[in-house]
Image 1 (tube, helix red, strand yellow):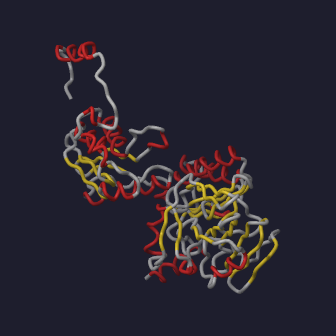
Image 2 (cartoon, rainbow, N blue to C red):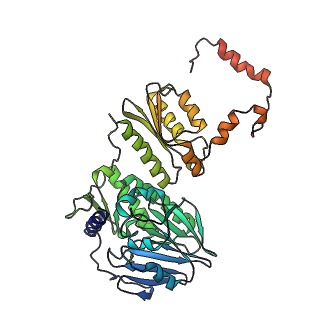
Image 3 (cartoon, rainbow, N blue to C red):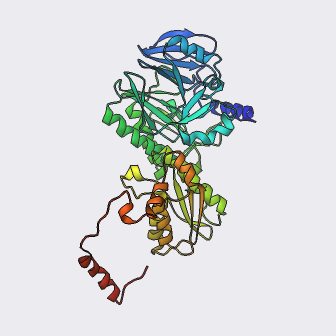
Length: 438
C-alpha cells in the first residue's frame, strides 16, 4: 500500500512539475561527486547541494560546521547516501527533513538511525514512510542548530505541507526552504491562507535578517527563491482569496489540485476547498469535533504556536475554536481552551455557555479547567492526558499540589494587605440591586 501511494504521488506530481530531465539545470556550483543516483555540487567551503534524478532534480543539502554536519532531506531513492555524504564531510551527519514527501524522505532515510522533522508532518508518515524504524525527533520553531562555529535557525513555513520547514544561516545570509515556496511550482496541500501567512512571515524575516536567497527543494541552478519571489507568492495568494484571480483548470491536474494560477514566474496549484478550508460545522459527531480540535493543535505547531487546540460546540455545531497563542501573543493566559471560551462568549453574546460542550486536544490545565467551570460548559472531551503533556514539558502537577497547600506553604509567597479597604467593593456588590450574577 505504501509503495502504491508513493508511486501515485510521484507520478501525479510529475505531471505538474518542470519538463527538464535529471540534472539538466545550469549550475554555477562545482561538481564534487557523481554516480547514477545523485550528483553533489559545492555551494561554498562547507556547504553542498545534491540532486537526485527521479523527481525533478529533488535536492538535498549537506551543511557542515566545525563539529558536525546536517543533511537536509534524502531524495527519492539514493542507495548508499549515508556513505556518500560521509565521503564529502568528515563530520558526523544528522538527517533532517524539510517535509515528509516521498521525493524528500525516500528510501535512504533507513540508512540513518534518527530523523528530525516538524511534528506537524507526522500526518504524512503512514502513507509515505510507515516502515521507518529509526528514532523520530521533533524540531521546534525558532530553535538554533549548533554545528560548531556555525548555527542554523529553524523556521516553520507551513503551506506545501503542514510541517514544511525552512533552515536559515543568518551569517551567510541564505537558507534552505525545501518545497515551502515551490521552486517555481508550488503545490499547496494545506490551504491558500496558510501559504499567504507563511510568505508574509518569511518576507519579514528575510528583510529583518538580510537573507538574500533560499535554496529550494528542486534546484536547477537558476531558480533560487528570492525575497521578491516570496512576496509574489503572497500577492498571488491574496488575489486568489479576494477573488481577484481565478484559477484555471490544468490539462493534467495533480492529486486533486485542479486549479492553477501563474504569474511572476511562479505557478500555484490548489483546489477550490483550499480557498475556504472551513469544513461543514453542523451535525458533527463528537469524534469529528475532537478531530477538529486535534487538527487545530497540529496546525498550530506548524504555525509556531503550542501543541493545543480546542473546539466549543452546541448540538453538533461548532461555535468557536481556539489554539494556544501564549508565545505568539505574549499572553500566558492564551491557552486553547480559554481562547475558545472567549471567542464563544463573544459570538453568542453571553458569559454563560450552558448547552455547549468543549473538545480539547489535551486534558486542561488547572487554569483552563477553572475557566471551563466558570463558563458553565455542559461536558468536556479531551484527547491527550496530563501525563502526555508532562512528557513533553507541560507539567501542571505542581499547580494541583500547590492548591492543596495552605497559602503560607505555597511556593508563591502571598500576604494579606488592606482587607478592610478591599471589602468595600464586595459590600457594594452585595447591596447592588441590578447586578448580573455569574
